[in-house]
Length: 89
Image (cartoon, rainbow, N blue to C red; front, side):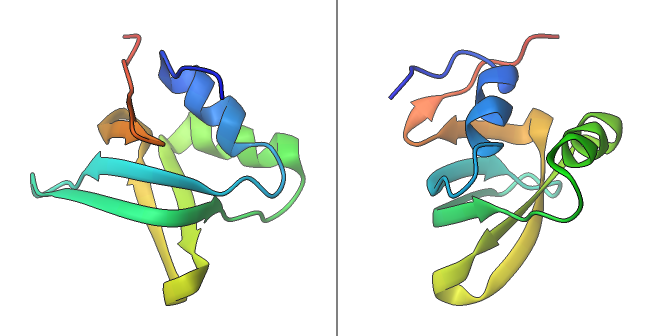
């Protein structure tokens, strides 16, 4: 596994088909949440998905074991697969 250093690395990992990951993030109300066994929700083409993520700053994620779909602000991701995420502003 490649050590995660920035949000670009996270998006590159999430964008790979079939990748299952764990994610820890801050919610907009300030609470911290951790989700295990997640996958990115795919809609249209892979390229259009990345454009949407870049434009609105949201990552749509599903947790199949719990049949749960949720959005995470990319800038509020704290850890990806147990490794800290550094934001390049």
